[in-house]
Image (cartoon, rainbow, N blue to C red; front, side, top):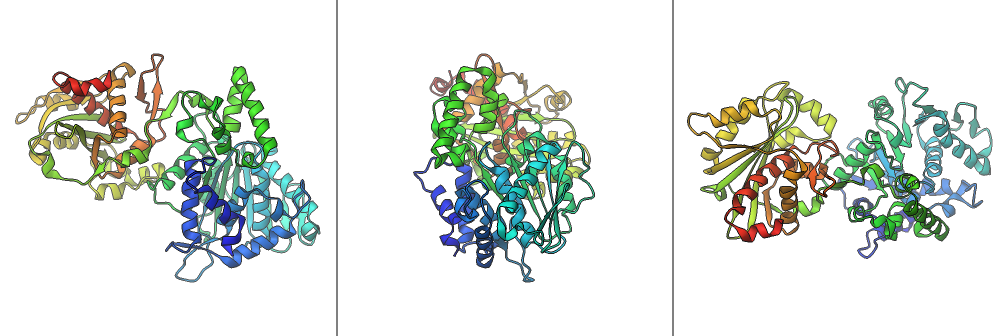
Length: 568
């Protein structure tokens, strides 16, 4: 039955190679869900009975604006969201009926009916969840939170089959379902405490205007529940510190295979990275389509957005609202771009071969961060035969902070340590002596000749003195000023070599995560550099790699004009 639903058909439409009207993360989510729907997953399946039940309930609900059955009036993306979230089940050894997805993230622009379809989901949940379930919506203020309640009320009043008070009772502060003794309550972050609530399902609306507290408080209430659901919805907001940024980033890591928390369903309607540069939003209609799924089949909506785009081009004061709310582009972040697509990086991965390094001249880069944070060491060399840069990178974290950092950053550090990509040293703080011994051991361990060690002066002076004054193998250390004027050339060079597949690194998930997190900033002279503050997570490995390539570039340029020609 699922193959006949609009959800399945929409997912098939999304993954068509010639279809550019949805972004790459929508395609990835559609591909992953179709694998489940086609019975190819060992973890989850689509429950046909649940699909039939939900479909029948949608037939008796009336669309208040179109005055037709909800099943006939819903947008295709809403079908995809509802069927996937409510009907995808987890294989359970005990035979329990457990939904597969525990989190649903919807990044979508204004006027795509996001609150309306959230109301549809809550009505379905109140009718189908176990007795005495409780549901909450959280928003920056009570007015916003009550928008969901108003939408629920509107649908109920227009649907004769459920409008009777024996089914739903609408009160001033809540809505009750008499059939299941469940209740829904809107909460306001500005007025209500979120703690102490037991939420079978919650909705965080306009999450871009809130910090992480409301979402985490709701999630904390669900720890003991088997069937739990958190729905997080928002457009983009221009502020730098909001929970939606983190949720989108986690979703992207899951879809890119960098995070193993698969029980998350994410529809990220935002333009692909290639449309975020050179003001392409001013001319490229795909920016509108990829961020506004309703505009694909609704000509009136599309024309209205074109008009808003024209005004945003002409008037600076209209630009922020248009880009954030109608294109899902953070306007204050237009000067910040992703460093490089992770799929391009992965094409440069090669099998590890310790013998390859023996006898090679290498340059080492350091990123010695604060004592309780990540530290990284990168080793690079240039192979004249192939014209490629080869790199090996390691991370270091405090041993006692592994669990805390894993939860906070959503990274399985224990797995990375087991893979040899990261080392735990010290207790609550980094043991710099361990890092120093590691660097000094590289010539013996890999048979390399360390030409130079590049470092950022911050937190590195003591370590540099020990490296330079070592009794057995003193190393030449070079300070690399962390400024766009200095870092632009190696940053550009590394990116070009990756794109040209002239960069090679051994399998390293931690390095890939750092590349995924990295964001670049341009200064007034258009010099680009990786900006730690603007990046969406740890980037210490990328920074140490760029420091190492700075030295390699400088050294090779002295005698290799052919290589240097690429980086003028």
